[in-house]
Amino acid sequence: MRIADCGLRIGQTGVCVTGLARRFRDPKSPIRNFVLLLAACTPITTRPDFRPDPRALIVILDARPERVTAALDSLVPAESLEVAHSSVRDGYVETAWYDTQAHRSRHHEREIANLTATVKTRFWADPWVPGQTRLTVEPVYRPRYDPSRSERDLELIAPKEHEGYKIAQRFVDKLKERFGVPKAAR
Image (tube, rainbow, N blue to C red; front, side, top):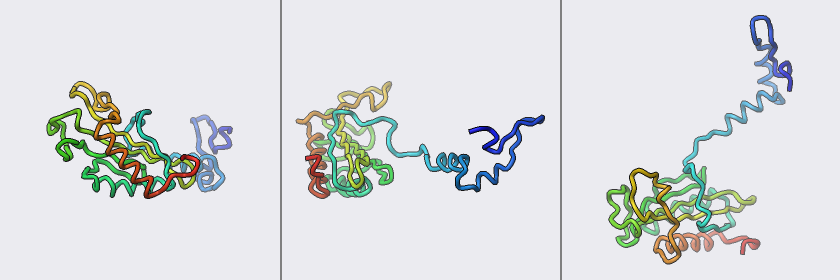
C-alpha cells in the first residue's frame, strides 16, 4: 500500500492527513480494518504468562471450551477444592493450594505445612476443532520453598502415585463421563 492510498501526503510542512476520516468510515478501508483488528485483539487475559507443562494430562472432550470451563467451576468445589482463578472467556481455571493429607485448601505459603503433599491444579480449555475442547490438566506441587525464585520455577508435575495426580485424574474421568470423548480421540 502506498502512502497516498492511506490518505497521507508529504507536504512542505510535514505529513498531512487528507481524507482520513472518510477512509475510516469506508468498510473496505485497510486503515479501518487494521484499527478494528487492534481493538479486537486485547492482550488482557486471566491466563498465566506460561504454557502448561508438556507432561500434564491432556484429554479431548466433545464440548466447547466455555461449557467445559463452566463445568469445572462446579466440579472443583465438589472435590473440596477452592477455585483461586477462573475465566470462562479465557478457558482457564486454577485451584488454590490443596493439602491432600489435611483435606483443606491453603491460601498462603505460610499456611502450608507439608510442601510435597500440597498441590495446585490448573486447567487450560482450548478450542480443538469446532465443538471440541483440548483440556490440559496440570497438577503441580513444590518440593521446596525458595523465596528468591518464582513459584513456577519450583513447581513439578505430581507423579502418578501422588494424591494430587489422582484428584486430577478424577476430574478428567468426570469430564469424560459428562461430555464424552470424540471417536477419533479414543
